[in-house]
Image 1 (cartoon, rainbow, N blue to C red):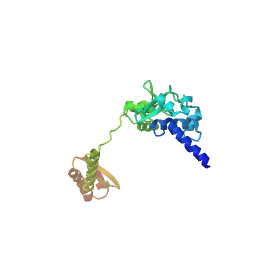
Image 2 (image 1 turned 45 degrees about the vertical axis):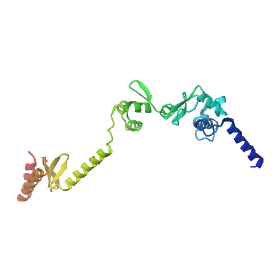
Image 3 (image 1 turned 180 degrees about the vertical axis):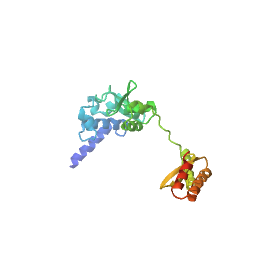
Image 4 (image 1 turned 90 degrees about the horizontal axis):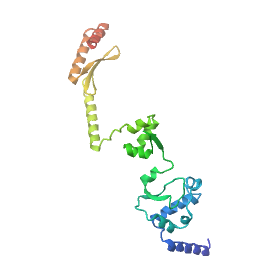
Length: 242
């Protein structure tokens, strides 16, 4: 680039800065993003904006000061530029500053769901029912009806302290299972006695304590040792079966 061209470019930049002085403001960034989406084919979002006929009004397209005069300052850093009608362009009548939650509801790609005689976006149903949009989506993908997906409660997550206590109880139960006497296993709050008979585990009953279950196991084993062969199996079955 020649020295003359470089100088012209610098002068042009200074002129633009002097003209509006908005280059470092959030409103200018919003204006620039809006403009590039609609007029620059190389912009990543162009196919969804300029590529489908969304335009910027003549008074705004080259004048960020006019944009700011019509829209006013952003109410907060969290506000975004939004179009009321997604099929119309950027004009003073169609644009507003909104929070992300409102902007998300107004996206063209939103998923609309109809239930209980009402048609709402997925995000609106999520907020109304207190169920995350991810949970609703996964339920629908799993074959749930829409009404069921929107009305079935979500199991609350345990708090850190509750989770730690829950894991401690599970560890204690596993340790206790390892220390149980032969022939005894734990099932929930009960203790099962069982013995091998003919290559199969035969259940001897459910008991309130591991000692009671172990006594039943020893009794069955004693019968099996005292009377060998088929008679022992028959006696064990008689002990098990009422």
